[in-house]
Image (cartoon, rainbow, N blue to C red; front, side, top):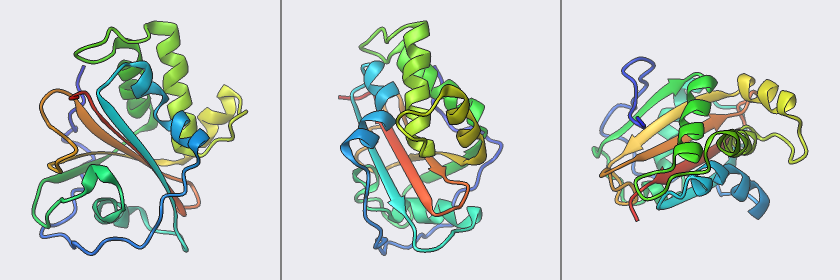
Length: 188
């Protein structure tokens, strides 16, 4: 399993970055949180977190990489202005593949949920990240997910142990006013 960032699609924000925290607040309900983390929990990974933020106005795609490390999320707490924060845009197929591997193969200490169930939990995570309704069909989830802009990130924040498997995923909605984030680490 490879959770590392690709070289193509890199959109790392310039350093030093601002340390001014964003005023946005996490609005993820318990149900949405559980849906977003479904693949990671099915894979038996060490820890995960999920957050959803609604912006007052649409944001351009090129501003997302600088916004992510300022959001009030435990996975970026303590990240300094020049600490490593790397991000790349990724096609939804690659994000789905990462979530499928997470759920079906598990991590270092788990054998995962296996094939069919791995697909189910990966789809659930994609649904939550893309903002699909809880009762959405697989076709509807796919349509919605393909309209989102997907980011994959890594950071040297304390939450990410950077020892085994760690990654962050962010989905920007088509209207560019909703950002959903999943962070996962297989270090307990």
